[in-house]
Image (cartoon, rainbow, N blue to C red; front, side):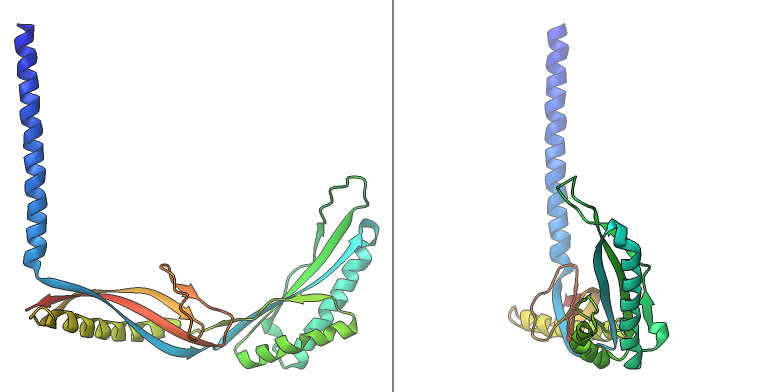
Length: 242
C-alpha cells in the first residue's frame, strides 16, 4: 500500500511539473506575440549645443607647517597670508560677499618616528564665487605673484558652471526626439514601413563636455575645467509603425 501511494505521489509530481513547463512556454510565446503585434520601433536620438559657463568657483589654500611650540605664531602668520589673498581678490573688484573663508585648521603631520618632534600643518581656505568667469580665469593666471610677497599658497583649478542647464536640457530633449524620429524614418524605410505617431519618450542623462570631447558616461558627466562647453542630451522615443 505504501508503495502504491508513493507511486501516485511521484506521478502527480511529474504531472504538475509538466504543467508548469507548458504554462511557462505558453506565457513566453504570448509575450513574444504581444511585442510582435505592438508594431513599434524604439530609437535613441541625441542633440548637442555649445554653451559658455556663466558662473565660476575657485578655492585657494594658505598653508604653513610648524613645530608644536610655534603653532600660535604660525596661525597668526596664516591669518596675515589669508588677508593678503583676500586683498588680492578685492583689488580685482571681487565682491566681499563672494569671498568665503574657512576657519583655520591645525592638523598634526604623520611621522613614523615616535620620538621626533611633532609637526603641524596650519591651513585656511579661501573660496571665491563669481559670475565673471573671465575675471576668475585671469586671476588664476596671476595669483602666483603673491609668492613674491611671501605668501605660501596652493591654488586649485577654477571650476566653471552653466547655471542655465535645466532650461537648456528641456530645449535639447525636444531636439533629441526630432533626431530620434529621423533615425526611425530611415530604419522604417529600409523595411518598407512608415513611422506613425509617437507612442512614448523619455529623456536621458545630460553630458556637459569640453569642446570636442567624447568622454561620456552612463550616469552623465560634467566638465568643470573649461569655460566653453558642449551640452549633449539623449532621448529614447517609441514610434508606432504603419
